[in-house]
Image 1 (cartoon, one colour):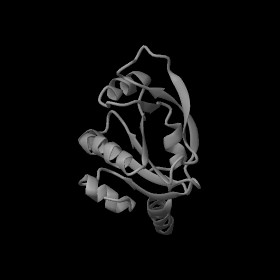
Image 2 (cartoon, rainbow, N blue to C red):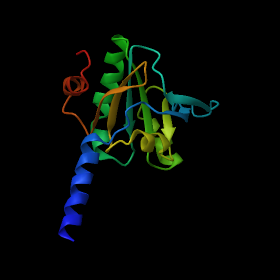
Image 3 (cartoon, rainbow, N blue to C red):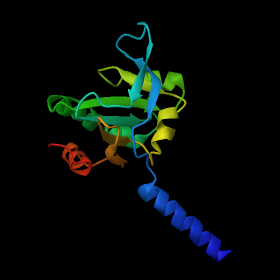
Amino acid sequence: MQRWFWWVVIAGAAYMLFGRAASMPLEKLERFDARRPAAARAETYVGGSCGRQRCMLVYVAPWCPQCRRAHGMILESVERLKAEGIETTVVLGMDDQAALERYAADFPFPVHLDPGKKLYDQLDARGVPYFAVWERSREIVGDVAGRPDSFDHLMQVLELPQ
């Protein structure tokens, strides 16, 4: 029995360290703009090939206190990375549609909604907030789960220009 326990512990630790997706999945999600909630909602593809040299995905959940604390840093990241030519996509998920739409009001730009957490599951992410950087080839070159201390810390972890 004790041997079985240690195998489970080792397997769990290995998954936590190495268990993320190697390439960015492609998923069709609803694009939602809280500034124009009555506008036609379109489903668009999120992930897949990056239209630029590198792209970043931010995945957050309304119920997550660390996501709420990272909100300012997420907004700063979107603006600063845009200036660097790195496209950022923000996905809200892991909750029901109404909660996601209410949370979308906190973002001054359109976001994508993933109420069924289809994209999250394909990413094999280890928590929220989740940040991932991928290249044109779809290869995920850096990711981190949890709230980084600052924008500079996030850029350092993801090996992006500061």
